Amino acid sequence: MQQRNDQLIGLQVQQNLKLNPTIASISIPDDKPLSPISLVKPQQNIHIYNKDYEDMIEMLKRMANYQEQDYPNGTFYGQMLNGKKHGQGLMLLHGRVCEGVWQNDRKHGHCKEIFDTGETFEGEYQNGKPQGKGVYIRNNESYDGQWVNGFKHGHGIWKMGNDFYEGEWKFGKIDGYGVYIQNNNKYTGSFRNNLKHGHGIENFANGDLYNGQFCNGKPEGQGTYIWNNGAEFRGLFKNGVRHGKGAWSKWDPLKEGHFRYEGMFENDKKHGEGVFTWPSGNYYVGSFVNDYRHGYGEMFWKDQYYKGYWERGMQHGDGELCKNGVIKKGRFENNVLTNQRSNSMWESGESNFKLANNLNQTFSHCSSQRSKYMPAIGRKPKLIMRKGDKTIILDSLSINDIPIENDPDFLTICPEPARQKKFKPKMNCSQLLKQHFSTLRK
Image: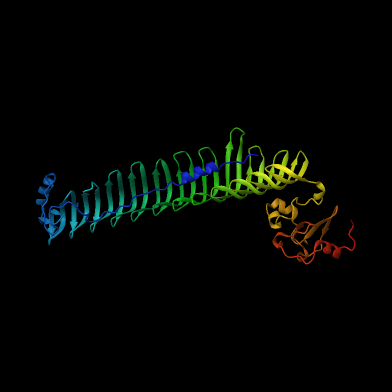
């Protein structure tokens, strides 16, 4: 039976889920540094006049308390009080202009500012910093929203090229509920510190969809991922990949049925106990390692079954194969029975594995096998031995009397799972038999 290789789909999950928003954080300082080109000494006041603002200067001259004041970095035209900018005014600097309202020498009220880099801001100021509603534009980037103490804070709309975000901000970073679009991928949900964090829904440009929990920009916790080909996974994620218990399924239109897997995942691969079902109805119950059937497992077809060990998707190790009612038991290598054992070795109907395998490993693979071999709770443990062509079952031994070392006479043991343990026997099997039976028939 071919092993399903949906790990290729898992790689697509990893690639798609790595898309995280990268938002620039911008604060507007009160006085941005001048261009390094300067023709005057730092302490020398200069006078700057721009003909583009002649009409505005003429209007300001008609206001009360109008003054013109030169500074080392430029000239102020407007209302002043006690030697400080106070009221309506215009500040001209080298390549930089600010027009608006001042209070106690600081921008305070509605202002429009053009920086020497081409950036612009228009909105409310308080004590020299943006506070309230404001619009900031820089090259192909813009922000229209609320500001607090010079930072984007509150509800706002941010754009950069084709990227778009509308939602909540905290001190210059995306934080809270919002909608983010990047490269035609759309995320709607919670953010923290510029990263997707909390519950969210992400619609990818290729048609995939993820609905679930995020942590630091990546899916983590309970979630559902639906591929554009109809495949679906519902379960646990960690660090952006499937990790933990989950269920995967995909519809096969040719066979009109589903491929299904339900069990454990690790690093986006089937790893641990699980059940895989094919559209034909065939199914496997057992252990997986790195997407392969590996360890103990049971495979069921319509007319046959295999119960035993697997290695990288192939029957490899002790096992039992039943086909058309004919049972073959022994050792398998790469799906081929290489060492068949006679049926007389299996008269007791117990497991077909030598005790050379660790007992905990032998009886811990699945509940169906465990219930078959383990006695009910409260029953005394059994010791099943073989001498010659006879099988002997001892019921009256206490757990401490059971030898489980590699004695050649010892076949298998069925203690209660919780009490199963290894210890050094006080006597070998022959001595035990002589102690419990006066005569041993041969």
